[in-house]
Structures are given as structure tokens and as C-alpha cells.
Length: 269
Image (cartoon, rainbow, N blue to C red; front, side):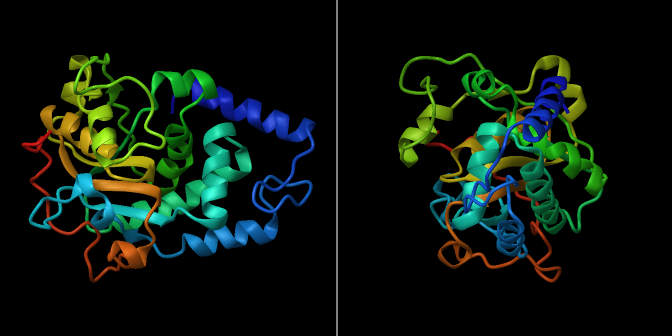
């Protein structure tokens, strides 16, 4: 884990001891996440599910899967509130609960994978400066230890190009096309790190899945550096399982399923 993220976690723990807190979900006093709401978050993440079907950037025009994704839960209710608060403040208790949810999703996605590595999606520079930490990297610390899976911190944000693609700024509130334009060409694997990822089977890790544009861009950058992208795992997907048409991930389903060979840039990208 990055040193900055470790430092941010330590500061968050000290503040939690010194400053009165309320539950981020229901407002109950004394705990960042009360017992009842923590139980509810565990309930919402007890059955990881395949989530790519309602992420347009991850599905081809013929309905075939470009990149399979397993989500720990649907982005709603207490899970959405916990994720949103954690992304803003990095609270230690939320980190513990959400990391365990991520572990379940990683286990479901990688159940038939050997020698897999986890690759976190980097925060934008602006978001990192504003928060002082990367939420995904912070969650992956305990998740990596619990799953005994190495983390390859290989992806970096590229210099933005102004023009039709590579637009500067964030993605909040943007639709499918605008998100795709915003992230196009936004990630890279530095040349000095390429040898560490070439030929490695990887699962990309991110926090929230919406259109899938960010994951598609991460997969493109890894693929161009020689990595074998087996799929992705997210903490929450904005479409619930029923609307995503995915259902839970079972052992019979085989986790991510067969290798996905369509991690290359699509023609319209």
C-alpha cells in the first residue's frame, strides 16, 4: 500500500478517537457505522454478482462480454452511504467492513484462478490531493492480506489531452458517451513497470461501477503493456443484480468464466 494511504489511515483512526462521531447511515451516536447498519452492509454484500451486463462500455454490440466484472453489492441503501463516506474520509471502521466485502467479491471472481494479481485503479490527481488518500488502495491493504493475493500498483494517470478525447475533469453526473470521452487515454503503465505486469494474470479493482468506462480504460492500458486481464472486481455496482441480469457468482458458474480476449481498444474508442 502507498505510504500516503497508510498515513491517512492512521490520522483517520486518531481523529475517530478524539472527535465524536455518528453512524454515517442512520446517525446513531458513538460509532462511524453502528451495529445494525454494519449488519445491513454485510447483508447487502453477502452474495457477490456479475455486474457487467448493465455497464455499456463493457459489453459489445452483439451482446458479448468485453470485460467480466464481479460486484460485492449493489450501490444502494447502507452500502452506498458507507462507500460514499469512506471515499470522502477513509474511516478505519468502514475500511474494515468494506474490505471484507471486497474480499468476498475477489474470492468469487478468482475462485478458479492461479497466480492472479490485483491491480487497483488510480484516483485522479485532483481527488488524491483533495482526500489525501486513494480509497481503492486503502481497501486493498487488508483485502490483499486476507486473500493472500499480491497487489500490483501499476496503473498511473496519463497527462490529459484537451480535445475530442481525454477531456479534463471528473466523471460525476456524466452519461455514457461523455464518460468514455473523459477517460479515453487517461491511464498508462509506466515503461519502468511494464516488465512487472507483462504476462501476469490480473484482476482490476475499483470502488464503484457505473458505465464501465473507467474499467475499460484500465483494461486497455494493462493489455497494451502485456498483461492478461481476467476481469474486474468492484465494491458496488450502480445497477442491482436483477436489473443487471447477472445473478450471484457461484462455484458452478466458474467465477469470471473463460478468458476474455476483447480487452483491446474497441473501434469506436
